[in-house]
Length: 323
Image (tube, rainbow, N blue to C red; front, side):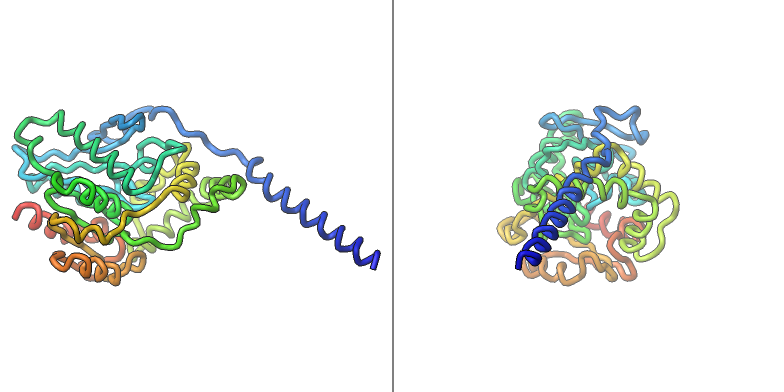
């Protein structure tokens, strides 16, 4: 019995030692800290605004002449304004003022470590950003209401904006939108070693060219071009991205999609027929909540129809915005 007890004690000490090493190891691997400012604007039409001390990067695609409509574009998880690189200029050529925004923690917006990534909070911040943008427009353009479009995660933000201030939204456009809660492990991020481990894994293992190529191949339903990989990877490699991602996992929360039934904002849904990330079943859920949803399914497209099928995507949105 004494030998057995000693063996158990020894095994216990070994296990405890291993756990301590695993808990301490992530802290021995360095992480980048968020940068205070970017050295230069990333695009010729880049602009920055402060909203509650958080720096938002956005791009303005201006039409020739007086705008006929105003459109907000919000990207999905891991994306940025680059997600609309093909579609945004073509939409502006139709007479639409297009504003593509990087949500905090993504693109070239701030990597604020304690930012609240709940969709309700994001919605409040983006509405404030639009108020600030409108203040710089001519009076006629400023009076135009905003059409709110969001892709995937950004669809949840756009929906939260419409729910919060339906009187300001001309319409809601959901692009393969992720509106419904899935199982979340955010509570695990309250354990500092696990949070740190996720940050280390994200920065040193996941934010690589190979991983981004695989990510885009799945999202596009085909291999991305080198330019597309660079377009996604460059902002993901900005200092502080891993820290922001960890905080997003901890604080992300969707609004109740059922609240869309309580507003009369016109609703357009655009989906890829081959989307395996947010499948067509979720579009059917949206139509159950809002039977008046005008739905367009782009055949052959996967999760990112605005990138893989930009001409069809632009035609659908232009017809909707200019009707």
